[in-house]
Amino acid sequence: MKQTNKIKTTNSVTNSYEEDYFKELKGEIAQGKLDYKEGNFISHEEMLLELKNKKKQLNP
Image (cartoon, rainbow, N blue to C red):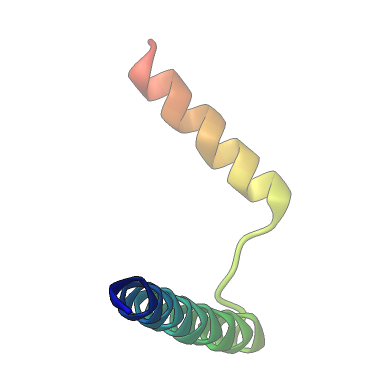
């Protein structure tokens, strides 16, 4: 009987974690769509250039 309760508790925690994860993921997707629509993004090339510049600043 105790084992069954332990499994139910574990499943409840797992479901809660998954629900939180998917809620956060959906929020990030919605924000990404809004950013894209408003033009708030950078290209892959711009991102690489930023990373190279940061690397140069850290290792002169």
